[in-house]
Length: 263
Image (cartoon, rainbow, N blue to C red; front, side, top):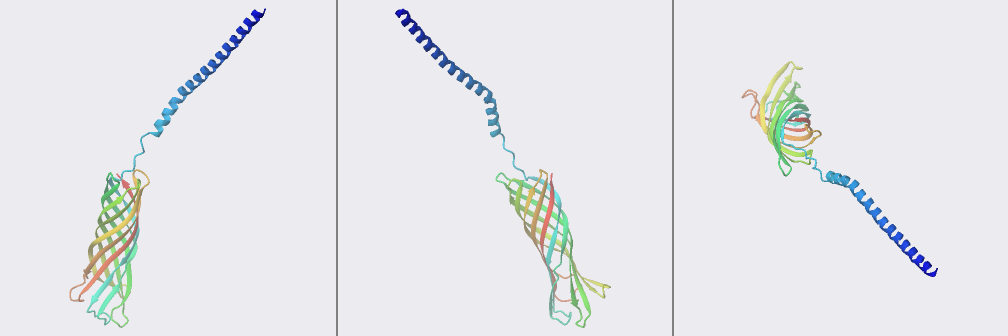
């Protein structure tokens, strides 16, 4: 009985050790199975997340290409009519500020090229109709006979070079080039019954400006710009000998906004 008990105790101990070992290995096998299944399930998701993270970057906006559009704005002019050796109102010299101002509107067309370093260069031509004029009184005889001098900027245009730096869809730029304008000066007397043309010429000068343009779609861009133009000085168109040594100059300050379509 004692031997059987010892033997039974050994069997029992072995049995329990075996069951403990089997239970331990069972836990390990269960953990391995779970980890393997988890890895199989998650692997495609991890790969997809990697693909998303390593996907192709969104391409920057390209400013290169042809474009055309319209612009509107306001022009403030500075003009001086100089008459030397006068005879008008008994004055020896006259320097009359005409200073036309008003609204302008027109069209533009141009082309840009964006370099690899994001610098953008281009050319642009524009033509604008000007509702820009000025009116000043002039005592033509010194005896109270009132005459008005009317100045009118009929049209203006320019051919310019542009250069800027692209911040993706936003392009600040500077521009400079050749400018031209049709300028008229008329003397009006007799309550408008008499009109004498003093000047009707095309002035040619230069222009410089700064602006910013933004592409709000791949085709459409909007801009705002300040421009200064100096159209120089010319002799009056009035008949020779009527007045001695007369000239008129013209400068303008423009604020413009525009809309362009990129082809």
